[in-house]
Length: 223
Image (cartoon, rainbow, N blue to C red):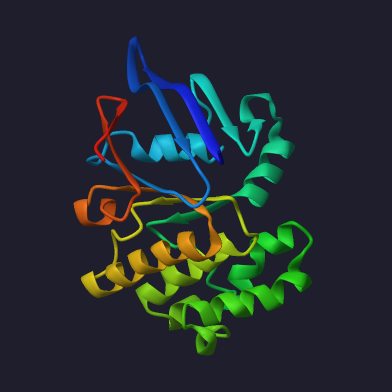
């Protein structure tokens, strides 16, 4: 098991009012599995993904990633775990405009002190997604679909155990969205990496080996 979340609750205080976003939610993800989570805007999908990715903390409950309970980790250990075991792909690619596509992909490896050794893997990944000729281009010189594929490669460069992706097709046209979904399916098959995808789109959700719905702060398994 790559990730196991148990009894996750998250609430926010708004003056005297308590807003409960997540209520005793549990989820487990195995190696090579795609779990898709559906829900409308404001249902708590991004909040859940941030908690699972150690970017935010739950009000209560536990999250275990690759055998490590993140509740017991300090900031430095969390950052190391995040960079080594988790890849992130979000709706907005967040590529640094002053760096080339290749340099953007290598940033997580550089944070681990492994930039030089990761270059050959980066070039293999660019070939894998058909972007070899675009490695030296800057983000402004790439199409929206190309930028998002580069963001996927950045998530893959440290060979994480799980990839978290939040509404990844939201800014893409139908053709590029379909290409991205095919890429996600191939990644999980070829690299045996687990993936959690949040979406409001039923078609996107359909690629999951398990599809869940986030409703009233709880997770309901659909298929």
